Length: 304
Ligand code: PMP
Image 1 (cartoon, rainbow, N blue to C red):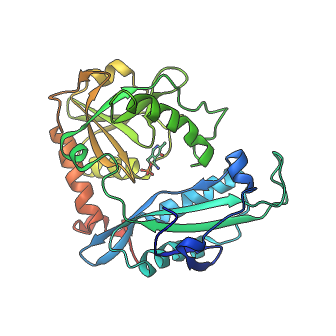
Image 2: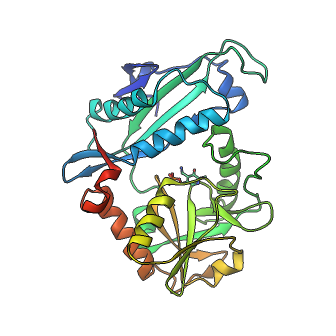
């Protein structure tokens, strides 16, 4: 990743990709407190546009607020930085990674007095769980690692350190040939994937875990909105692992994962073992929306 052409927005300036470097004593590297976003820009009927840029930028600033990180750039500057980075790298569609971190002035758990830095990088990134996964569904395994507890991690924030838990879960299951991990909360109820929210379909209704232990996903919100607009009932509630085994359909949502069907959980086939009809309807609507083909949701797209 470090050795390629391109530009990265770095503390207010565009710098050459290879020059976007930090000191080894960067506080965030040692203690894991950095906040970031994952955003996507899509090629649309009216040129390249960023999907739900406002919501992602707001979540980024809320993540910083939760950790009392004083961001030296405004919401408007951060919005513009993301648009500029996409445009100046000349990419029609890409993944966007804004990140806010704590500088290298001082070591020790207290970050007080250290400088705060911001960067935005963009790169082409295809289907996170594979094109095959999008079409046919993926094989998922419940991890032995629990998702965050509300009084251990503040999960409204999207923070770098939290991904240690995601990596542990993902490593554990992919080592045994599964595509992705499902994590349960500390009470044993379904929470989310290592980088995705989760949904099930039963008798035509959509169910997803409430937000206690999972990220308030922007794709999750988009799917809930689209489903309700289509007349599909959506219920946020505690979900058990066996409820998922017996679901008609299941799928993951996320900026990287988009809408990816789950065809198997813990070696039990879900429904027909392939992308189900409700999943397909929502997935196809999602891809229409991000491509600017659905007037109703055009306000979710910010042209660059
Ligand atoms: N949960 C986790 C742990 C994630 O990392 C992500 C990806 N950001 C999501 C859910 C989905 O969130 P979003 O739809 O906002 O990308």
